[in-house]
Image (cartoon, rainbow, N blue to C red; front, side, top):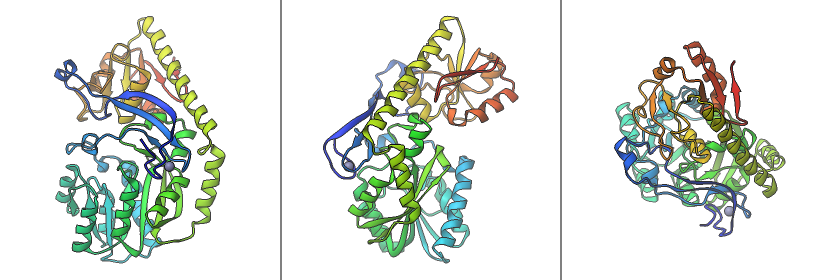
Length: 406
Ligand SMILES: [Zn+2]
């Protein structure tokens, strides 16, 4: 395995999360009696360019199958974020009607919708069936991966784009240098590439190691991104922190050679201070993750030995990393609950085989403890569940396992 950006073959291990199944590969009852495939989930670091990345890449068709269930338009926080993004790009780059905007990994077209309402021409590229939903809603979308031939086809039919966006997909696609070259080929000479990705700084600061799963191939910070754009004949010109998806970075890049903004330079200095390029500090982060995991498992086992009934709250992608890494299985969590309508209800969590039930069960059953798996929005969740009638105690799993309630 080599660095996905600079090709360096000597990757250093940062945190080994064990072999884990794909986080969206929920099982039916029948499948519990069949073999289950797992893949290494191992966070590594390139000492040369500073990129943090997974050391094994699963075929995208397996991680993002056609029936991939996620829809952007169901997340209010993202809808708001995308409206704001479209508005700010319109002003910042003086976009006019008929300018072409391309979104890579456009899902159901939520971001493009905002540009379309402003009168611009929009085009989505999306490999999963979310493309069908987008087309139905009037957002032209090509159901394909964004490859060299897709980029060529787009160029021929639509011309060059003023803006290319990739939100929560730029770290998900293998071969980033090739990807970035393809993006450059789709851009007008004065065009801009804008991307939002989960930010390594937030993962480290907020201790969100549970956001490491196979969908995320790279965990970005600025230094390796600067290198990436340079290798593709582009320049990173600006960067800012945004709050979406538990803390993300929004970056701007242009074809050719350009200066980086003072804001981006300051952010890079903050990254240095936070230890994002420091082997010893990253090792410390990994050690803390292992301690937190062991303490959580210890607490749950002690409660279980006293005869407690424990249920999980929500069943998200990241919660499957936490459960799998910590080895919390169906003998510790009786079940996990999802809001009515979730496609996961009636299935079992990948790897840990915990039944996923409708939220109602929590209020009827009143288990002694509820483990707040989406702990990054834990305060909000606890308030809602208390209001809706859950009387037991809550357990926050991270950053430090803690019991809430009397
Ligand atoms: Zn590298």
